[in-house]
Amino acid sequence: MNRDSLYLGGRWVPANSGATIPVENPATEEIIAHVPAGNAEDVERAVTAATAAFDDWSRTPMAERGAMLGKLHEALASRADEIARTVGLELGTPLKVAKAVQAGLPLAVLRGYADLAANPAPEETIGHSLIAREPAGVVGAITPWNYPLHQVVAKVAAALAAGCTVVLKPSELTPLVAYLLFDAADEAGLPDGVLNLVTGTGAEVGAAIAGHPGIDMVSFTGSTATGRAISHAAADRIARVSLELGGKSANIILADADLTKAVKVGVGNAFLNSGQTCTAWTRMLVHRDLYDSAVSLAADAAAAYTTGDPFDSGTRMGPLVSAAQRERVQGFISRAGARMVAGDAGIPEKGYFVAPTVFADVDPGSELAQEEIFGPVLSIIAFDDDEDAVRIANNSRYGLAGGVWGTPDRALAVARRLRTGAVDVNGASFNPVAPFGGYKQSGIGRELGVHGLAEFQQTKAIQR
Image 1 (cartoon, rainbow, N blue to C red):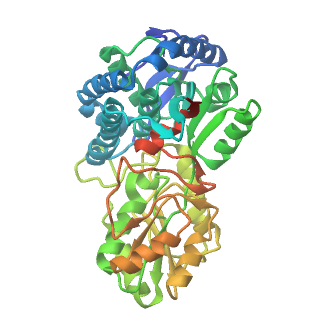
Image 2: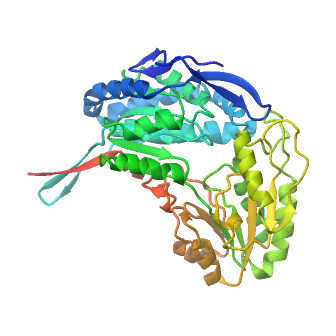
Image 3: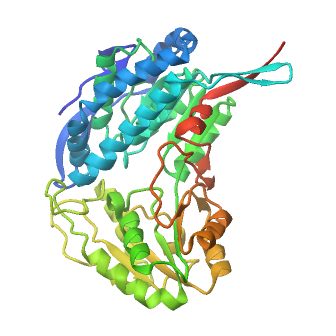
């Protein structure tokens, strides 16, 4: 599975330094591949290629760009099984989930942008002014390891549809699946320089992208701390920034909710991808009258999450991505100071596994309830009434996602009061064309659908 090249200007080329980065299988702790360790000189080459391609690509009619994205979708879809298997190996996502989410979701997003670009909306007129939407320029995209293809496609597809050119840095922990996208781009005949790949570390490649004067916009998904550093680097040259950062989402179960369903879906949401999901409902807020029953149901549900080999059909939860991530999560567990009702279960001796863990009687102001743990750890908190639930839910520096369960009108009323970018009422499914992003320290800007497209566009008023 080794990859020895970067993709610059439409060609596979060696990295500048010749150094490599190992890619580990977190379920076995084995090195499964190496990729190039790019550096600032490689970023310079990528930006040069993207800049040279920008003029022609930006003037290509949007419908033609949509047709090209359609070809990219076709080439990527033919690799769906390989995508799922690759993510299973480098991230440890169970194969069933990898097929549905890690492969299926980015393909749906790419198809959506292909269709959106193929049928562009008419230009707006305000009085005697024509309002033109134009591409933002050369985009630096820096993506995380937890949904390694979806997060890439959410940025790349929107940027290309808008007429931007892109320099991509995928996470060094899960870079292999990004290569499959570039194989597909090469097969689809994407114009030279429109999409460029530089693998490497955040300290080297990410920093070079964030601070490069030729990058007109930086789109980043990852930790709030790194997002803050990228914002500072981009601010020095007044570059545009779009940030999708951390979360500590609340799942509110009102007094009139279907408790059994709410708890089952809530636990599943919290433990998806081994809890390594920025939108995970890691705080379960339960009306006091239902609290004891909810705790019992959550403990039982957690016990059913079998950990193990991602390629075993009986596995419901894989490992965490790395030894460092496992150590971080276990640190939160050891400091919890709450009542553990699930956890300490048998896990494989090999691999970076953490048992699915549930804590009850959690203090809403504690570290456990305030910090993004990014592992399979659920906190259950009691509330007295709807007002109390809203207060506890909004008591967070984050505001990315959440859930509310109850009679439809009551649940919707509570959802409207949550200071968060997305809320699911009674388990409503994820919508890949609805705007996605956060309030507060969960980010700036939106991804997906027409709102995601607009992030990569400038607005011009032409008076006639």
